[in-house]
Every structure is written in structure tokens, then in C-alpha cells.
Image (cartoon, rainbow, N blue to C red; front, top):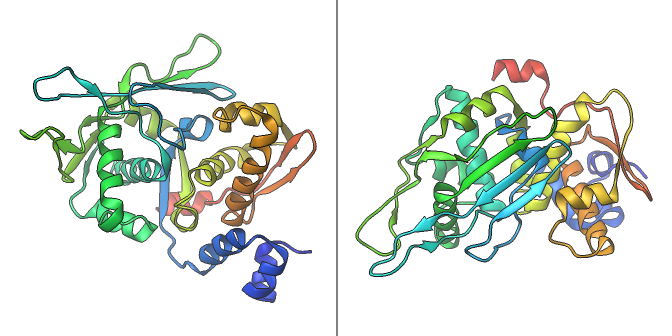
Length: 304
């Protein structure tokens, strides 16, 4: 049996669905039919340590460690009329990832940590499949506030080095305070913190927006796609990543390994559906990564 991309090209979607899960076929088909060559960028730290997929208790912090880096996200506080400050919770899910991807991409494209939003974020989210209007408006406002108020730390492991220490993701919030209890979202400007922007410029991972669009509603697949884009093209030989190591990076919310493995395998299949050049094998011991072409070639990166 060929790859899902081979079957889609030679036999069409109906034949592909007979051999592959429909979700995989739909993602691959959407990616292959998208003629948009736009690029996105993300700080490499996100490829090793990601945000939670689901909502945590408002006062809970998020901590996760990869091979060489540890991420800690502390929830921010919001003023409440005639009462104590309340936690708003850490950002989570697909929408938070898409907002962050937009901020990082725009900042790098313009080499400016101040990002003009206005209608740009609305247009980009609409293009990427998560419109800021309608039913998604509340989710966008919620995640924008969480991003604006939280504080994060990326700890680089080894040699006594530390990356971002006690840094906000943004200096200027995505919202402005009003006299109302919740505050009113203002999608005008945002300003990445100096430390975060510096690390982003030093360690960017280029991504295809067509790939992001095809899996935009699946935070696990987005995380795996970014991880593969970061890891595969620098390998000099095959690399086994054990299931236990994968669970530590991608499945801390799963109590048992046998619950994590099928979910990760599905996310991996979705990620490779939008990264046709990714080469890997799923084995009994874990996932074997193989040297692969990056999703975005250096020449295209330079042009963009």
C-alpha cells in the first residue's frame, strides 16, 4: 500500500479512505489542494515543550519537560470589583497555539516585536480555519487574555544555561482594561517581550501555513508537526524516541502509557499527512525518526 499522498494523487479520495482513516485523508487532501505558499514561524522551544491541550483549573500552573528544555507557565491574575484578584488560567488548545503562531510569524516577518493586529489577526484566523467571529469569538477572547496575563519560563537543560526566565509572552496585552469586570478585548496591537522575541529570532522553526490550516483544530497534531519540523531535518541517522520519552513530552495528562500510545499515533499520522517528506517508523519500542527534508526548504525561507 502506498502513502496516503500517493493514493490521493493516483486514485483519488474515495480510494484513499478505503485504506486510511478519513481524518487522515481529509487533512492530506486539504493540504495537497492548498496552493498558498505562505510561511509561519515558531520559537523552537515550543517544538520541545507545548501548552496543555485542555483547560486546567484557573489557578493551576503548567510544567512540562522535553529532552533539553523545560517549560513552566504560570496563570495570570485579573482584578475583580470589590474582591481579591482571580486567576484566569493558562492558555490551552488549538486557538492559543494559532494566536501565538500568528504573533511570532508577524514579528519575524517585520523584524519588530510590536505586532499590529487590527483586522490582520481576524483575517489570518479565518484563512487558517479558526475565524475570530461567530462561535469562536469567545474562545479567541479567552485565549488572548490568558496569553496576555500568563508568565512563562523556558529553562534550557544542561551546562548551567537558562533560556527565558520569568518572561511574559507579551509586554503589551491583547486586551485593554475597562470598568467592566472582565475587561474588553482590543485587537489593535500586541508587543512580544524582549526576551521571547530575542529567542524567537535566534531559534525559529519555519512551517507551512497550508499544513497548519489542515490540522488547525487538533492541538496534538499541531504539536507533533512542529516537533517533526524541528527534529527531522537535522538528524544524521535514525533516532529511536521511546514511548516513555514521548509520553513525557506529549502525554503528561495521560495516566497510563497504553492510553497515550493510540492517541499519539493518530496525532503522528495527522502530522505526517501534512508533512509528506517526513520519514519515520512506528515501532514496538517507540518511534524511529529518520533524516528528512524540512517542510520548508532553506531557499524558500530566504525568499520569505
